[in-house]
Image (cartoon, rainbow, N blue to C red; front, top):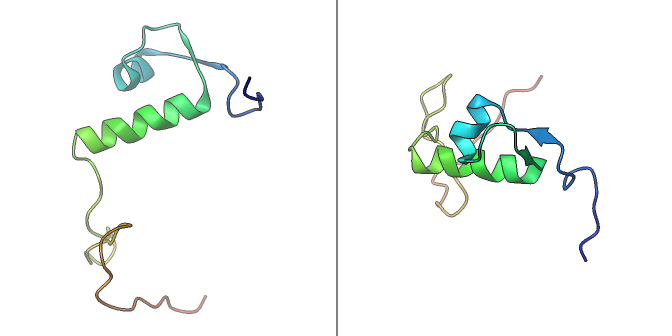
Length: 76
């Protein structure tokens, strides 16, 4: 049996928004990991991933895509 911890506890009650994202009926209980997984799947399926930086409009690189240039951040 898997050990239960704060992230796997069934403690989130599904509201209207979570029902739309997860496909679960309103009022059911979900764990944090199930909600996170469902939100990521929704973003992926709807094509809502951000592909450009909102500040400088530079293309964003994701894991699996090769980096073509070195990015340096200004000192703070």
